[in-house]
Length: 262
Image (tube, rainbow, N blue to C red; front, side):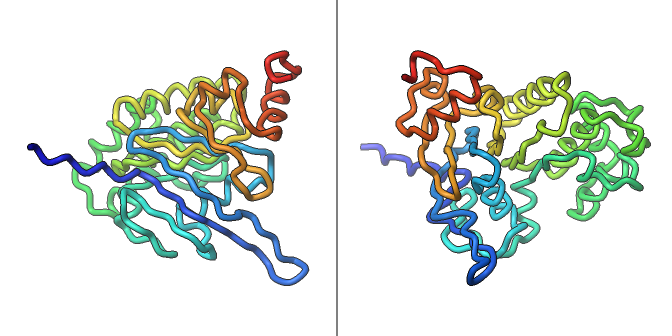
C-alpha cells in the first residue's frame, strides 16, 4: 500500500505565548498563553479592542519583542528569542504607519535596494523595477522621497520592500488604518492579489472587522491578552460567535444590534 504523506507543517504556530511587561505593581500581562496556527497559504486575523494584545503577538513573532515565553514556530522550525537572516528571508512585516516606516532621507530606490544588497541578491535594479510594478507603482517613483508620496503610495512602497526578499509569510500590523478611507480598499485589494499570485501566508492584526472579513479565512478574538474565541470568517459573517465579547464586537462593527445575535 502507498505510504501516507506526512502533513505539511503550519506556516505559523504559536503555543502558550505569554508576554509580560514591568514588575511588581507595574506588572502588565500583555499576552496570556495565546495559541493559534496558520496553515501555509492561509490568512489569519487577530482582532480585538486597543490594548487587547494583538499587536504584541505579531511583534513577538517578528522578533521586535524578545521577553516572551511559550513557543513560536515558522514552517515547523521552533524560534528562539533572536532572529537570523534566514528568518527575514521567510517572514516580513508591513507596519501600521507608512509615514514612520520609511526613512525620510532615503529615496524609494535606496529603500528597496538596501535589503537586496544586505542579503546578497543579484539583479538589484531589475528586482526594484519588478517590485514597483508589483505594487502598482512605475519606475517614475523610483527616485522620489517619502514626502513626495501620498499615504497610499508610501504604503505601497513599504509593501514592495517586504517583497524584495521573496518572503513566504507577511505579518500585517493594521496595514491600512493610517490611510484615508478612499485608498484603504485599494491597498487591501493589492495585498489580496499578491497573496493569491505568490501563495503568501498572512497574519493580519486589525481592530476593523470589515477588513478582517475581506482578508482572512479565520480569526482569533483577543481580550485583555487572552484569545477568547477562534472562528471562521464565514461564522463571523453569519453572526454566529460563541462568546459574548465577540458578539459585542460584531454589534459595534455593524453600528446596530442585529436580530440574529439577540
